[in-house]
Length: 77
Image 1 (cartoon, rainbow, N blue to C red):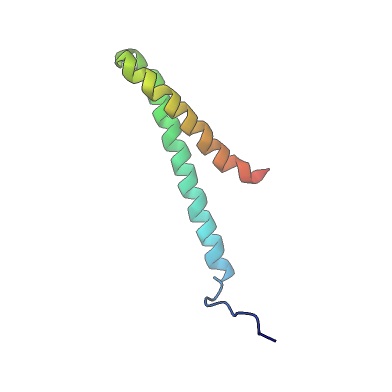
Image 2 (image 1 turned 90 degrees about the vertical axis):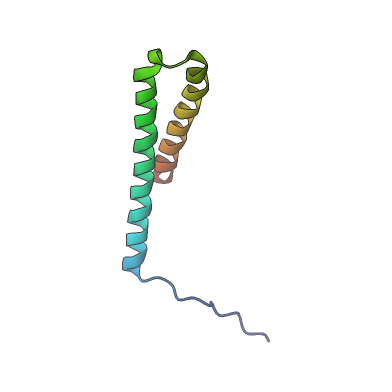
């Protein structure tokens, strides 16, 4: 019988895994905050922007904000 393959890596210690998850969560929060700030800034300064530019940017920023919020909140459910 062939023995099962042995992993070629050692699993991370628990503390390192927790730290990695915290860093990942902080990066996700940073992305959500940035997308939200860009969306709010777009809506605040929208009257000053070119209408064609506004038409192209608004759906992208709103969709990216919603996607990032879903990415952040999704694992909780």
